[in-house]
Length: 337
Image 1: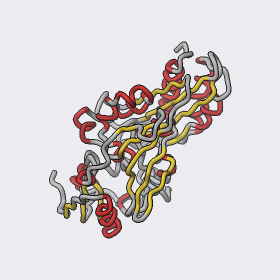
Image 2: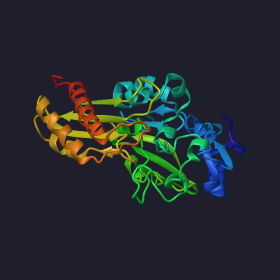
Image 3: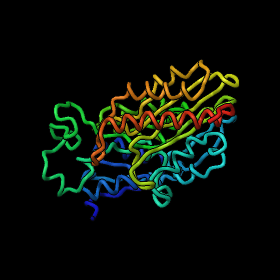
Image 4: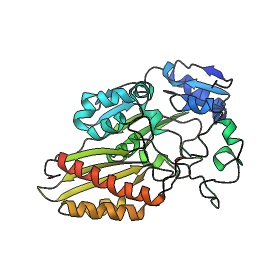
């Protein structure tokens, strides 16, 4: 498949980049790794008039703890391969290294960036198809039509959010630096997502994510990311689950944070699981109860282009939350998993 025609822009400075975003707005797309965007352009899902290459700016590729302490800052153009292999991340935030290492294939991770994964477009079995395939159906909400083929009576789009690194960043309490014309601000990562599969990001057209901030974790903390997909590589998550567990002492959980992707149109905190775990003595039975309650409170969507039932996805939510929490508990130094 060939790319559609577009005008390529290569800004050299951050000011030039932001000026282009402000000028071209909805008519432009930003290119980071391009592993998802270029495919969607070839499928004629996205046909931007302008393509702005972020990598020519050249200042957003780094992993550092420049602010001191054990927290880190990650430039949005840092590749997933760099994040997976970074000694700093692997030592202090292994959940993020694990999540980055489960994205697609090694070749794709070499190109794909953390900023691109955070802003990864939602996916749908009726949307992520060739132009010829889509022509056989009425245009869906995500394509500017009036119907969602997943939930026919819906007034919003039910495309799924499946980026692996985002649940890991959520449980780490990460923030993102968002740059726009004339200002920069730090936002909690979960605040980026609207829950609507069509307009899934709360960013305006002239804003971009430039940096990820991760605060230091307390002592006696463990973390883990697990994922289920149809194939062992390449495929997006049917469900991905991340957990961070901080222990008060040998048995009591001081803090539990759990998040999932692949279930709905936005990444989700499993608040019910966190409530059941936090402040309580941990054992496998309590962790199973937390995972069970979380699966009952998450309204999963069956929408991946394959005949996978909602019931099956609910079972995956339960199983993967349990697996992630058990692994994090063990890594915190007290678990007997």
